[in-house]
Length: 103
Image: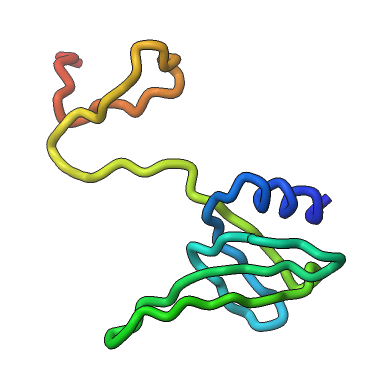
């Protein structure tokens, strides 16, 4: 099951965070670029104070303990986010700072 999900994330090309159980560490903002057998190839960058390093790392499928991906983000501030007219009401972000509801 995990193999199929990781393959799907590879095809989508989205950024993910991956937890490596055997090393007890997270790899943030990585892209899964290849899966061959039980080897998963990841590409990511690490921003150090002096330089930005690009890494390509191969990990075994069984060492992956968790995979997460950011679904969306909204900048903080005193403004209303743009919402499409066809966005269902249930999926809209509540507007707390300009609430005109007197309750």
